[in-house]
Image 1 (cartoon, rainbow, N blue to C red):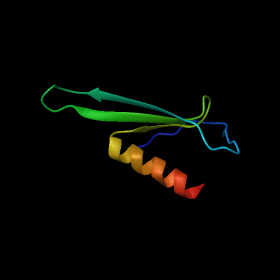
Image 2: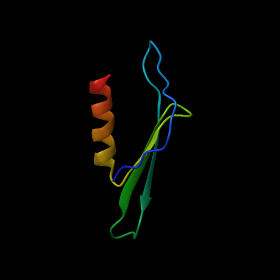
Image 3: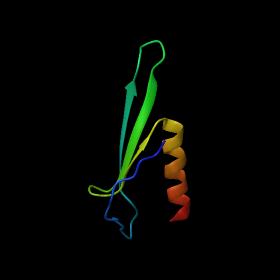
Length: 65
């Protein structure tokens, strides 16, 4: 599941900056990993219910740009 917030794009000639936050939630027997990724300090923040979804999103962003 992905959620979006308003943003201001940050783009440089050298590349892009992303802030990644990963955490574990749930019981010790069956923890689930979640992630948020933000473009730059004030950019769009997206939340993901799995690490795989987050990685897929980042890969798509890198291919698109």
